[in-house]
Amino acid sequence: MVKGLPKSIIKKYGISKKAWAVYRGKNTSNPRPSKTARKVRRSMARRYSRRRGRRRGSMTIPMATVAGIGAMLGSANPSGTSIIDSVMSGDINRLLYDARERFACVDMYGRFRPDWVLPHWGPLIFGALISKFVGGSPLNINKKLAAHRIPFLRI
Image (cartoon, rainbow, N blue to C red; front, side, top):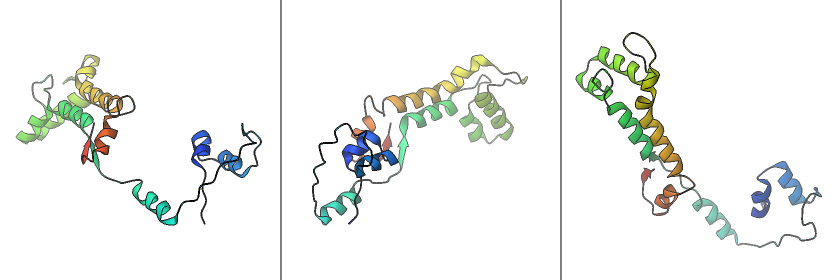
């Protein structure tokens, strides 16, 4: 029979050596040593079915970050063309020049332009922040999408 840490101890100490010591009763720093944990026996079928159904691995696409990357690649550089235009035309030299302008913020004379950082990298940063705060803990839209079993889509 395999035993593990109770959820109450994991919640307090995490999965660590100290948690195991508290569970085994070797540590006296337990705030309530007089109370013992109530043990609940579950049937083997229920125990193993919960383990199998707990986590489902699937590929998800973070839409806000992908939109930021798309805006970064699709918006026009100071030279007038975008990276997507250069790829579609097949001009390798123009593509390399546009990529240098877009990603390194360096003009045609080889000087770094700090005023280009926000317009060039802003969409990607904004998309990542949206993905972090809207899809994460304050609003938990990703959790709601996962609960409704919507595939591939995460914010």
